[in-house]
Image (cartoon, rainbow over all chains, first blue to last red; front, side, top):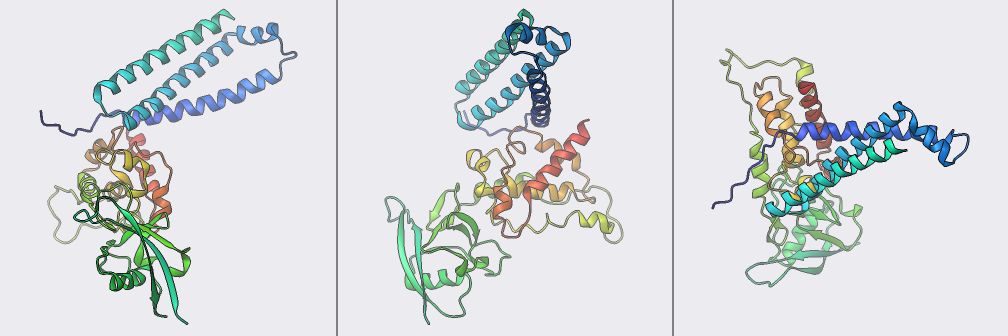
Length: 115
Length: 235
């Protein structure tokens, strides 16, 4: 088969924008989280657990992990695209990355709602 | 007082050499020799087997782009006195070497051609020229001056990794030159063509291109403007 070079997958802008949006959200969350953690009356399990028992904090934290997963997806996928040339191996690595990140996000949710 | 300049030059002749090597050579300069290219011409007079490209010798043709002490630049615009010795000269990185300091620019020009570097306008031509306001014309300043020397694209790691898929800073600067041109009517097609994870978005804004451009142009800024237009079109 003649190997033809093709480009034109139309998701460049979407992922670029998403990477910036998720980065901004993570930066803002870090400030909110640092403030909330540092102003805890006492750094022990009870206070820590109370901090995350609020619905808003759970929601914001879950959003942080979702952002982290999407952000990492774009970044890690770019690394595979740059350095792994065989198509089959690259696709396999994409899938492994995807499954891992979805798994991590689910795991994070489980931990958050268990606290 | 005679000035002697020490050189360390990358040499490779595929017909004779098994692999590339660095040649140490020194030349005496005349007082009128100011630019690196003038010194290189003297090296060539001493050892005529040395090959490099040059033409206009005044920074317009872009032929004598090379890696000078680790940084891409034009030999004809580089002051000899500004360089630490021995002056290490290598071909532009990332492109196949044809011989000595001459590289094969095919891939670079393929990317340039891929952005349709000409004005597209299917409207019936006016009786005289297609006019622009001074503001519209102003937008082309800083983008139309590219001489395609390839200093920027060959200093870009994204271009090194994906020279076949990433357009590279020179091509993208020229893409913006036509996207910004109010006389061009193919803006949407041009933006569609670049909305790809490789063609435009392989740029990670490390700005090596801006650092080396001998014409002091700013491809990163042009790339940013293309992204801005894509966002304004999408949201």
